Image 1 (cartoon, rainbow, N blue to C red):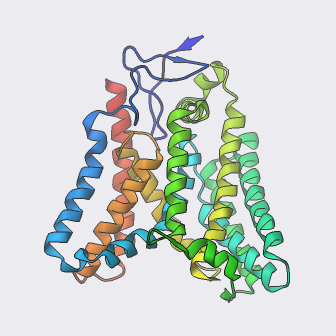
Image 2 (cartoon, rainbow, N blue to C red; image 1 turned 90 degrees about the horizontal axis):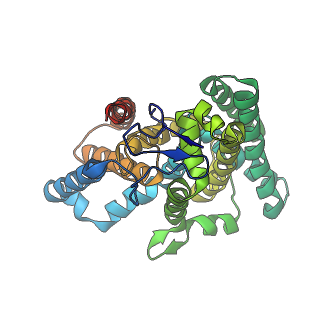
Amino acid sequence: MTLKSDTPTPSGAPDRRAGTRLSAEGLIPSGRSLFGSGGPQRFALLGILAIILVLCLVFIPEFRSWRLIASMINSQSIILLLALVATIVLRTGGFDLSISQTMVGSAALTIVLVKSGVPLAAAVPLAVLLGAAVGALNGFLVVKIGVDSFVTTLGSYSALAGFAYLVTDSSIVAGVPDELVNAVRSEVLGIPLVTWYAWILALLLWFVYQRTPLGRYMLFVGGNPDAARLAGIRVQAVRFGAYLASGILSSLVGLIFLGYFGAVDPGTGGQYMLQPLAAAFLGTTAIVIGRFNSLGTVVALYLLIVGITGLQVLGAQTWVTNVFYGLALMIAVAASKLAGRKKALR
């Protein structure tokens, strides 16, 4: 059975152009390139990043230091990991606002267990189990019960914030085992492992999104679940799996977070809520236009941090970061909508 694709959404539904046909087996648009459709404009954001970076190198002497460049890249690794995780549920047409608090909650549970005498090898699976439970609960409420994903995951976010304060007794907890610290901070080719983990996850998600049936099923489910269901795709299973994967990966990011900082502040979850979403939405304007994709997310995040760092080096106050990310999120969502409408008119 073949189906014509329907109107796209920011989650990246296939377009309606002539010659684009989808099957229940493949769901692959004809003539798709390595990075997807979109023409030269899919590299526009990458070009903007290159231009901004060159301007900073020319007019801001501090940018000519590898130490500053490396610091920018490494400092964004946790945010990049969360942004990549965010694309999983976003690609299926939902929201998961709980990822940052799942990260903090898992980190808090791990360090509290370790300090109470539980071996790290036993504490880590329990932290991952927490992430799986959060993802399963979100998936059950959204997919099975039909609760709005925004409301559900916002509730999970709040509950996990309380959980983090509970297990840490509302205080910063330090004393991370050296094994975990070394697994995150050790360097390969002068770059910390935390950054390598983020890059590896980006490549893995790119492969899943662009080169596997699952990635295409996620795309189709996010764009038109009814058509996907008629095509024989297990829509509920795909959506539930996305929330479950989001929860598990968020808990793993929590372990990386713990090793990177060496301590847990139960109140840090809110600091990591906006930036990942801004990068994920802005990423829909790069590499694969109108679709949540991992490589576009990487480009978007580095564009944001180069711009913010440049402003701060020039003397801007620290509050410029929140303003920059907030405006970027609004612009990114608007650009994603426009990209989807442009595809629909072709």
